[in-house]
Amino acid sequence: MVRLLDRLQATGRFTRTRNPANRRTHLLSLTDAGRTALHDRDTLLTKILHTPPKPPSRPDKG
Image 1: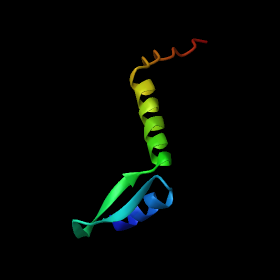
Image 2: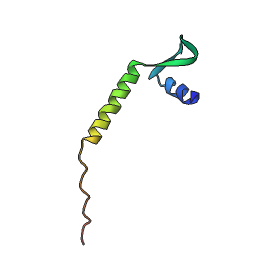
Image 3: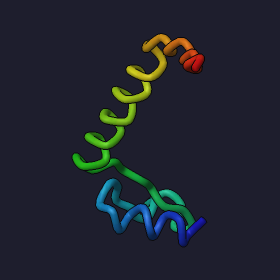
Image 4: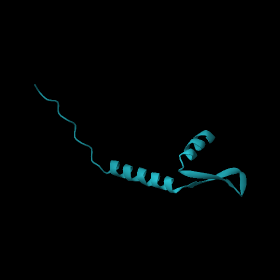
């Protein structure tokens, strides 16, 4: 889990700080870049989910 968080933090999408109430844990906070990425992902998923599928194409008869 730590390696995954390290890689994600390196993208600049969140920050990790020690939890003052429990030093064994960390608090994760989204950065502006993280909020933008989350918004972009939500926009894309909404578009995908609300776009009707295309009908299957018919093979040409020759």
